[in-house]
Length: 212
Image 1 (cartoon, rainbow, N blue to C red):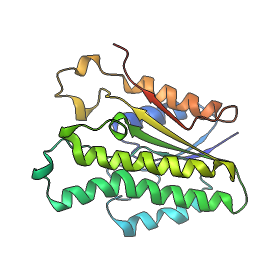
Image 2: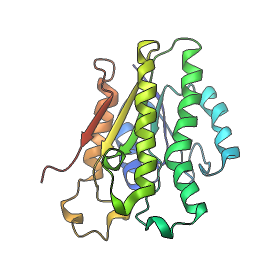
Image 3: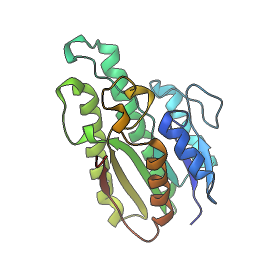
């Protein structure tokens, strides 16, 4: 099956690697970013801008959504202000939910096949005191993926929740164990392999972490 793929957060470290791998395939790739020139430039912290994505998804007949955009915070819970907390939830949880709804509505009206991949984190399953709000937003994404995947029995849209461990990115540069973290290009290969084999298998959720 040939997909029309919308990749959010395409200019992040993992996003760039996923885009590079998709461009080696037969699929059509549309890239979202807030910072760079791309196919869909919107700010996920702005609901008015998010709404403009619905027409884009219809026009391009997006049948594969990769919710990759996200922000990280390990700031102490009591030190986060209201705007910071709200922003984390808007970008990590609310935006993926709304975009998934747009894709879901567009495909189910004609009972078309589709795939929604949520790039989640191990923080969405295992809480960490230093990442309370970040973990909570990712736990929310886990819950959303689980609830939406129930509808796989009634639709042709598959939902995959990818719980990924720490990778070598700009966000993790200062961590002591940086050198032992996973390489984003390897994770990107895994994600694209998942897309390619989707028609053969149903994989609802998985964890991937460094075995070192």
